[in-house]
Length: 175
Image (cartoon, rainbow, N blue to C red; front, side):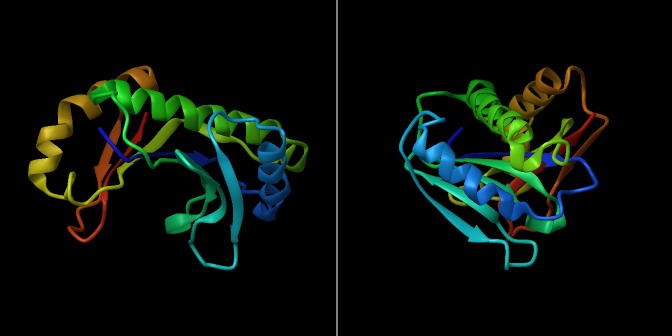
């Protein structure tokens, strides 16, 4: 699978100011804290239910994302890989989890920011390869179920696909 996005949702209550991620992400760039080429930080906190604070990289982006009114850490893989199926989802998840753990441990968010490990969202950020249709859902079902079962430590109690055909293919799982 290509162009995989993984979002780990934040636990409530949310931090009062997610703009605290701006100096954190700048520090990550300066210290080369993540693999790959990190380029810049963008502040979209003024956009309601928007991308929040974005760490822009060449191969991927990481955001403290507020889309759809749900705060979370979002990993967006931009470049194709040789990984397929569950392997592709697994590597994207581990990157998102690593970013979440790093954010939780940063002094700017000490004790204020925690991410659920039992709920996550997979979005395939390519409408041409993965149109948001029942056919795509059927073709991806086995890989998604295997990934969610492995990642959540058992079958999810809730699996929800965004049915809007204009939206990107997206599935949210909760254990």
